[in-house]
Length: 239
Ligand SMILES: *Cc1c(COP(=O)(O)O)cnc(C)c1O
Image 1 (cartoon, helix red, strand yellow):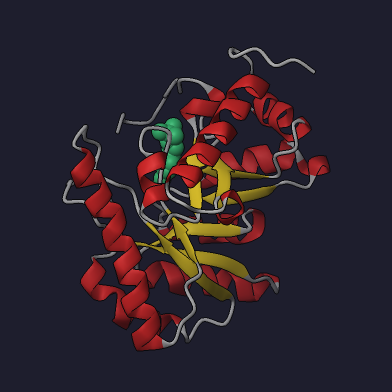
Image 2 (spheres, rainbow, N blue to C red; image 1 turned 60 degrees about the vertical axis):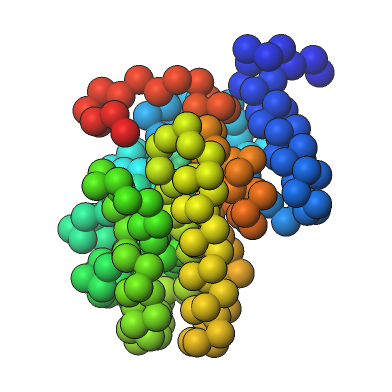
């Protein structure tokens, strides 16, 4: 099959090649870095097209959008990953339709998710989102709060804490972006030593900065526009 650069298959192949190249440049094995395609704002039909190319997990930032797409595409058995800021009142929808939340950033959300999951007899993989950049628009837990938060999370048996997530500052200053990613890596190492929690996964890197994230130890890159094209935000503020 030939895949032109302007097709989903072509863009996906280019991103995979980019991940391989970044791993090679960093002296890392490409099998250490997972691709999470981010399908937010794109129609279920586009996700179905991506699923036909072999993609099984999709990142979304809204609970309602996951509910709608998961319902429409139920027959495909896809996994839905929450990567956006979550309101506590969305916990039940998330507990029902998502397989993972990467944006866990506060105790009241953990309480609500655990309660909804227990009621449904399910468990959920979670990553703790840390705010490593200094932009006001970014959400996430302050890194200094991580050790205490990890201790608190032990009380929630439906939440499997697997690692950390961050969003780097939106800037052309590569040193600044790398510093944000490096901070996540260092927080992980400190937290593992202090708490004994195994935090194997580091979700960091997006279309504009994933090679830097891979150089700084990312195990998962969340790529939206480089795969699916430009987003057409209807209700969302731009980042
Ligand atoms: C939208 C989004 C992405 C993907 O962004 P692109 O720049 O389109 O690759 C990654 N992570 C989070 C948290 C997002 O909200």
